[in-house]
Length: 188
Length: 188
View 1 (cartoon, rainbow over the protein chains, first blue to last red):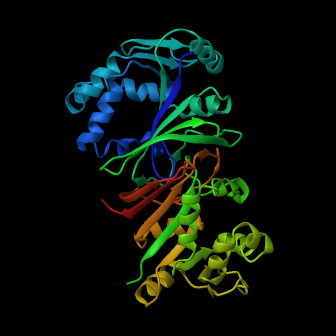
View 2 (cartoon, rainbow over the protein chains, first blue to last red):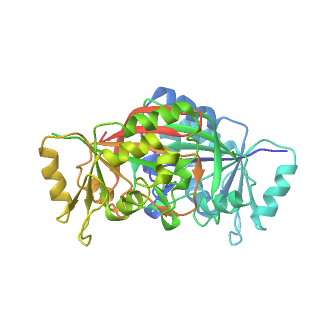
View 3 (tube, rainbow over the protein chains, first blue to last red):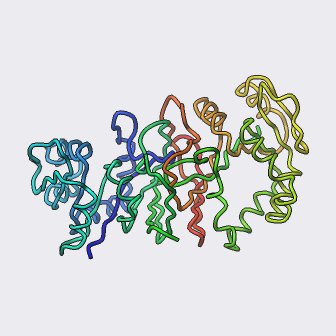
């Protein structure tokens, strides 16, 4: 069975995205070499990326550009090459390289994908998808980078979740730039 | 100058209190001996506790009771004995042992208190106070325990803050019960 992983940056007030979709705050501290190596390692992995429409559009508007190639060459190459899936009922066609568009029900589509062969699936951003899937206990792992910033407002990954989700801390890593990587599995 | 410290538990979605003021989730894992020693150490400190009215009422309704004495004798003794301040324009009298009631403007009262002699001041809970003071750059340290749980809804300490607050991670500690203590100072 394929593993379903959430990977997101959050602020200390729990937001994976600030007001108006701002996530520049998550890109500070990239000059910490140990942290940069960690990020590059993630981006060169074998996973398949899963997105909601909003996050997909943001990512598709950045990673294929010359600016991304200049600022983050390693991560850009990884993001552009990796297998991607976007869930949207309204999108006509997904134009970013190596993307599959799925228009059917997310929960049943992902249950089916978990039973197929393939690499681990990684959800980034995509709060509305995460809160749906978290309630259904389909997510196997939450990889969260806690950033040293408070935003004051934004959206959490668990908005609208109808019950408390207990997690178990599996591993952690503290970076010199003040970011804290926490890896959780659901349950006690 | 006296130090002004925030000490709060948060969920991984950033809430220091769940819906309807629920914070039972913050009391899990107290059977971890290392964590229990950490909590008891905090409660036996020399600080002066500062509360908003809502958090004060919650605390004053628990710590002096026989139940608190039975479940958390060390912390209860500390909480009941420590100097406390409650900020409220509407409260008539503060009945919990060793509490001073302040009815004037919070920001100017705390600026004045910081210049008086005395122990460090510690704000617990009290989200509306914290977001006001954080904006004014009066808080010297944020001591945050990140709990392995997602609540789905609640209140953050920074609700209504009108600009981003950059923090610097000063120290951290990972407990076996999955709680993560993070200590921040404002600024980069």
